[in-house]
Amino acid sequence: MKKIINIGGVLISLEYDSILNETISESFEGFFLLDDIKKEINAYIKLSFKEYWPERVDFIPADKLLKVDFVEDKVSFRYYGVDGYLNLNSLAGEFYIENSKTPLYFLFRFIYVYLMPRFDTLYLHSSAVFDDENGVLSLGVSEAGKTTFALMAQKEGFSIVHDDLVLIKKIDSKFYIIHTPIIIYHMEFAKFDKKLLTHMFFLKKSSINKKTVITKKEFIRRLFRMILSFSAVSKEFFNLYFEIASDLYNSIETSTLEVFPEDFNLREILKTPKKS
Image (tube, rainbow, N blue to C red; front, top):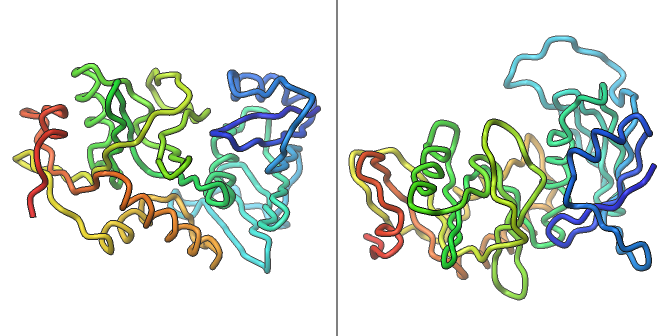
């Protein structure tokens, strides 16, 4: 079977075994492209019940769940029940999953990380919220407070895009938070097309609420840590990343943000000047 999905203007062709039809339909509801007259396929993925790696490991520690290898223009990987490869030149790939219940989120993070930068798109370890005037990203490592930030903003009337994983895309010199089918964990996330990105914060828990200036060099270094880039990336990926990250720094307000949840007001923070 074959279907086309549209994620932030990037069209992805899915070819898969019929037994996966229900899983595909549930995972990408609202993202299918129905127009069969004209298509631009930017990535090709085949799903099937195979195992790409010759060896089988039944137990892998949580921090060793990933294997990534680069050979010329091909990246091979295994992660959480997904084995496969992507050809970075042809934008083609094959994914072998253990069973029909394997979360397709795990499969698509490889596409997001390795292919989306070709389309001015970055995949970030971040939460995101928006209202009529603002699109706000809060970035940080695990336990930095991304979910807390999103929930506090929601109490002020902001809508939550996601509390952990976000795609942003450059369109006509501006950056947008784009809607994606990353639906995991425990929340109801807002459904939308795209929202203009206006602010980006690197979170830090504190006893006060304070924005601080961040240099371009530090911004790029920190941002790279928030891109789920796994254990290996290509030289081309670095070049694409630096180009997008540089444009991002010049386009929106960026800063570090110390957060004290008991006295937090996002609307006031957005109005407050950054401190050196």
